[in-house]
Length: 343
Image 1 (tube, rainbow, N blue to C red):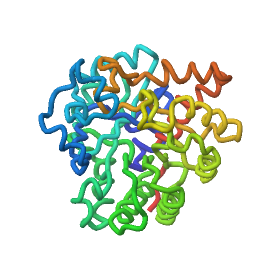
Image 2 (image 1 turned 90 degrees about the horizontal axis):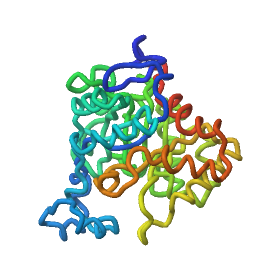
Image 3 (image 1 turned 90 degrees about the vertical axis):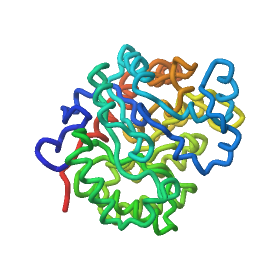
């Protein structure tokens, strides 16, 4: 991916582009996916053996946490008008983070980009050995080669432009360390950006980042996902940002329930606090769109939630145009731009 056609550009499902063309970007969403395999170990699935479709009479229960397999599937047909709505709101690009083992369909992503005019950046690489046991026995070198192949050569003619999303890894487990090192090696050799979930604890997250740095990954190319849960601990967020990584808030737009300790107001306060501390350029924002209930057609905030709802709320709290542009356009542009590979 360090070839002249990619270095200094953003690799999208329709080819490399000038980073300036990205516009406002949602940095972690699902377009075409089936996340049921990723949750097959969830004992709650036992109560959803009928596989009933998401319908109006079931919507309330699903929003409040009732398990539903149909809810976890997103199709090209359902998503197309939702992505068009994102474009109509002024959205320019989305980063699609569905893995190969979670229903990713590269050609469908290319069709969606062409049909809606929205730039789509596709992810690659394994999610986590805990959710995909077939990863556990593979040598790190094989995983690295596979990631590099998807970045440079593509899948079904469609190139990936980001490594991830990588799930929450435990640096104390050999299989997780192998995946982390393979991701770091691939990032070093290709200059590609990385998206990895924060680990279960702060110390484990920093240990994971230390491991990746030891294998040559540039912290400035790494985004740490699911930082919403730290919104009331801005000191912890600031310690991450001080490492040079991006702190990504990507649960935005979900309705608050008793199952969520953090809401979007907490995240907004954290974003402004980080900006006050000088970390505005290390923050990424994305709506949470991984299920049908996240789509507007099913009562959710949709792909445009950050543009339509969250940024106006930040402005209400005092954010100016420069900060809004930094968060939604400039930061994603810097993160996604491919740098020269090393080694």
